[in-house]
Length: 295
Length: 236
Image (tube, rainbow over all chains, first blue to last red; front, top):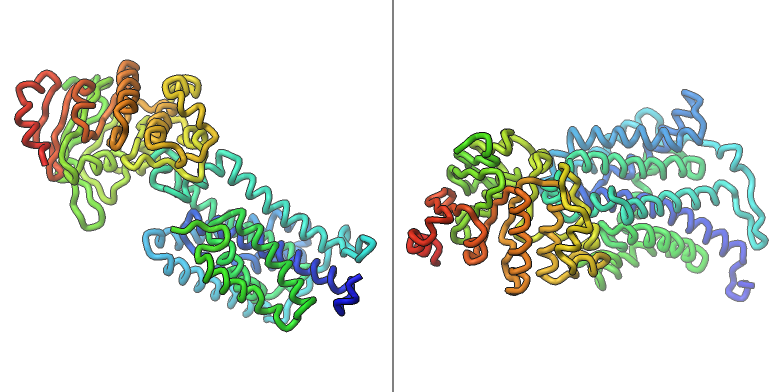
C-alpha cells in the first residue's frame, strides 16, 4: 500500500510504534519537569538521573532481592521519590529565592554525581532487564505485529499522564497546585502548608521519572547514561510545548515521538535532529512554546 | 483595654523587605467585633502592616497577639490557621482556577463560616459566573470573589486591603453592605482604605500611619473634632 513511496508498510508502522513509545517516555518525563518547574521554579536537570535510578532500582531489586517487575513499578518510584524529597529538603529549598540558573546548576551537578556513582559501580556497558513473563510475545494486529510489552508501555505511560493531568485539573489538590504555581505566598496565607506541598511535588516529579525508568528498563539497556541521553530530547520537548504547561507536555511529547519515528522512515538521516529543528522554529515563531503563556 | 475582649494587639512591629526597613514600631489594638481602619498616604506602610501580620514580609520583630496567641514567629499558613482571613490589595484571583474553584480554594480554618448558598445570596453575580475563569470576571466581581473567598473559611479576623480601589460606586455600596453585615456577625476587621468616605461610617476607630508608625488614633466619635487633623495627614 505504501510501496509507491518506496517504503514498506511494515517499516512505516514499525517506526510509528517506536515513535509512539519514545513519545510516551518524552511525555512522562516532560510532565514531571513541567510540574516541578511550575511550583518550584527549578529546571530539574536531575530528571534524567532520576529516570535512570528508577531503572536501576528495578534492576537491583530483581537481581539482589528478587523483587519482580510489577512490584518494582510501585517500589522504584517510591524509593526515587523519597530520594527526591531528601534532595528538596536539604539542598533545593535553599535556592528558591535565587535565579533559575542556580537550581539548574545544582540539579545538573547532582545528575553528574549520581550518574558518575552508577557508572563507577556498574560501568557503562549496560545491564539486561528481561520483559516480565506475562508480557512476552506479540499481538497480531493484521497489518503488523505489536510486541505485548511495547503496547503495555504506551498504555501505562498514557494512563499515568492522563491521571496526573486529571488530578491537577479536576481535584482540590490540583487546585492547590495550580494556585501555588501562580502565587505561592497567597496560597500559604490562606492556610495551606506550601513548603510541604513543594517538597511532595518534587518527590512526585522524581517518582514520575523513575516510573518511566522502570518502564524503559526492558526496552533499553539499564545503564548509567540512559537518562542523560533522553533528557536532552525531553528538554527540547519541554521548550516546544511551553515550560510549565501540563497538557502541553503530554501532547507535545507524544507528537514529537511520532514525528521522530516518521522521519526515520522518510528521511532517516534527519531523525536525530528533527526535534531540534522544530525547537528552533518554535522558538522563532512562539518563544513561549506552543502551549506556554507569554509573560 | 480589657484583655478579655482584645482580639488583635500589634506592638512594636518592625518589618523588612530585604534590606529595606518598612515598619518602624507599629502599635494598635482591635477588640472582638470591632472594625478599625488604617489610614495614610501611599507608601506609609499600611499594606505592609497587614502583610506583616500575615507573615508575608521578610523579617519581622515585635509582637502580634491574635486572640491570645503570639504570631510574630509563625509562618503564613499557621497565622491563617489562627482564623485570620486575608484579602490582598491586588485581589489575588488565580487565573488558572474558575471563579468557584477560587471561592473554594482556602481551607476551612474554623467553624461558623458562611455557606456557599449564603455567599451566593450576598453576591449573586458570583453565582452566575461560577464557571468562568477567575480573572475573566470584572474588577468588581473579582473584588467580591476575593472577599467572599475568606468568608467561607470561618475566619474571625479579616485583614482587608483597599477593597474599594478602582470600583464603581454601586459596587462600593454592595461591598459596604457586606462589610456591615460581617460586623453584625461579630467578625473583627482591619481595613486599609484610601476611600475615607467608605470607612468613616463603618469603622470604630481609625489609625493614621506615617513612615511605618502610628501617628494618630481617631475614634469614631472624634471624627468631627479631628477632621482638620485627618485632612492634613491624608492630603497629598
